[in-house]
Length: 485
Image (cartoon, rainbow, N blue to C red; front, side):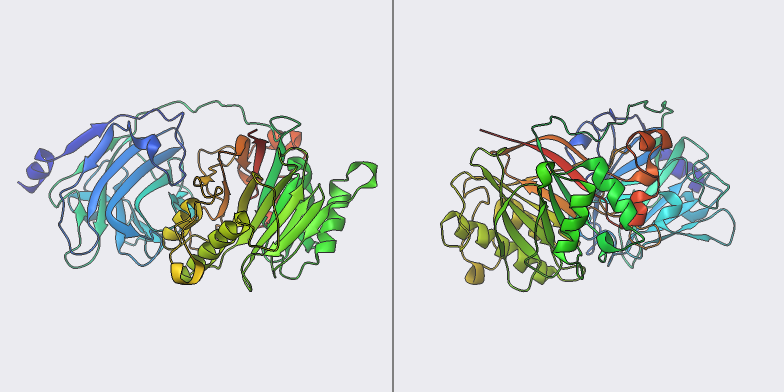
């Protein structure tokens, strides 16, 4: 009777939305035409209430969009579980709400389990190639799991194209999606691998301004063991402006010497560098006109650079490394202070002076792992503590918000910027480039992760497979700017 009840309520949905324009980046417009959507009953719990889940797949990945009734940080402080019956057999795996789950994942505790036998095997995100964005608090998340993974080293995770999926808020009175007694099925239609040519690293046009942001992980750029990897990365990407983070004990003149060696300028000119705080170094092929610390005792530097590419002959670079981890209040202060700096700068109230219409961008490791308000403040200029930092100010000269540049990791339709397979946290989007679209057009943008790229492509770019893994836990982000005139 129970089996018949389950079958009666089985919800069989199949279909794949067009994957060509899909990027796992923490934004959700590319889910609008998804055909496989399950909407849950509402108001079933005093805690997190599941709203819906959506599915799509390609030859390499299963993608899931999860919608909740309230913002959470997905990778900590919650009891949300994902359970998947990966062999289409309710009699195998862990029995939960009518399915036999071979795989379960506890998002809040950042571990999973693999139920092939009575003794479950513990999983890390590396075992199932788990990705989930955004990293900050949100009501919506998109999740990826590798379709070709071998969680125990020998057995494929997915033994059927038909899977059964549920989300579970595992606490007293916690919500289930679908409700108990119902089973959701999704058919991952077989589809051939997309044979897309990998892009080269050359800039879109020789006249474009190429910027790079890179967290070098604890003084990495001056570490003799890691220095060769950085050299190959810098030579391959060939940037004009560079924002470096975590240069705690790095002398700026050391970086200047390295860049003069790795990327020599014509006529024996020298790279210019500025360090106004304890950890950020900003580097430029062009003359640095001025530099200033944006917020005392915090890692936010404003650097004014002379360049003929810009319609005003200059560009301002704001190099950021916001405070890490459980420090929402501090990060919000840093975001507020940055907007206040821009407001006062445009009104001529700062020591640094810029010409009207001078373009700028901000880049660096923003560590946005808590409330979303920090990002909204930076994009829209909504200051949280107006008593301390003054009135709101749209960061594009008081007239418009900034744009969050999303750039894919080459070889993947994903936009993470940090990964460490040995840490419990799955790959995250921590490093940002924000810019005013009224003044800057993005011509080309990418994030580089050498360890996932084919050897023949790496050889053509004069890179080695282990370069980005050896250099840092963060990935270099690169963008080509063309100025709007």
